[in-house]
Amino acid sequence: MLILCDNAEAYLDGYKLALRIGNPANMNYLGIELVFRTKAQQAAGADGLQVGVPSVLRAGAWNTVHVVVHPLRASEIPDLTVQAFADKVELR
Image (cartoon, rainbow, N blue to C red; front, side):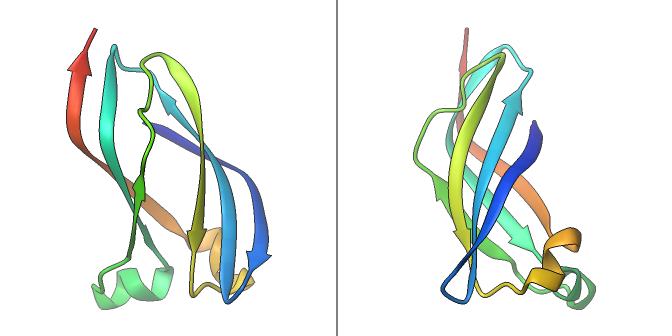
């Protein structure tokens, strides 16, 4: 998967992110969970913020996803990492 952040806007004590997730595989991903970690969380080996994605990530397409990551400061955005985990795949 390829993940691109199109937009980040302040929201409460964090940020609302508009992500485009590219799925170059020839399968749909269902039950996606994104895990966000700041540089400090990575260094400490801490768990990140888990966010479920309710939509299907379609095969061979860019999929738009909106998530809220909090707490998060503006200075942490450049070093923010994201991992994606799929519960199920649907072969085409």
